[in-house]
Image 1 (cartoon, rainbow, N blue to C red):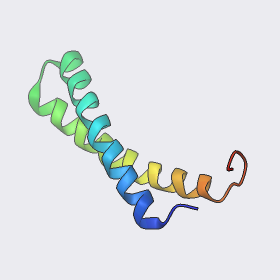
Image 2 (image 1 turned 90 degrees about the horizontal axis):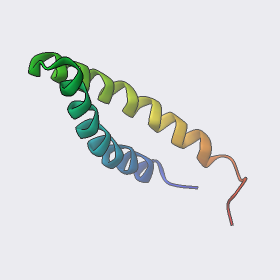
Image 3 (image 1 turned 90 degrees about the vertical axis):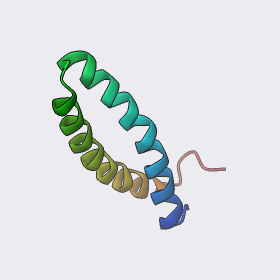
Image 4 (image 1 turned 180 degrees about the vertical axis):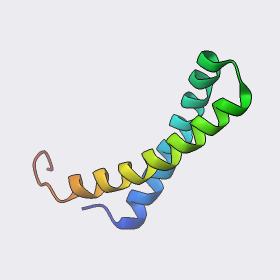
Length: 66
């Protein structure tokens, strides 16, 4: 089972990558910098929280582990 610290680091590293992608897509769709930033930051916070709990839940399941 991953430690809580490892789960947090994994969530943050993924969130950086995903946030950049969300920001680019939001800007393409809105064409507005401020709206894109607001959407990106809101999604990043919410998704990070949900990813952490998803990761913790999966760490309790033994299926697929060596």
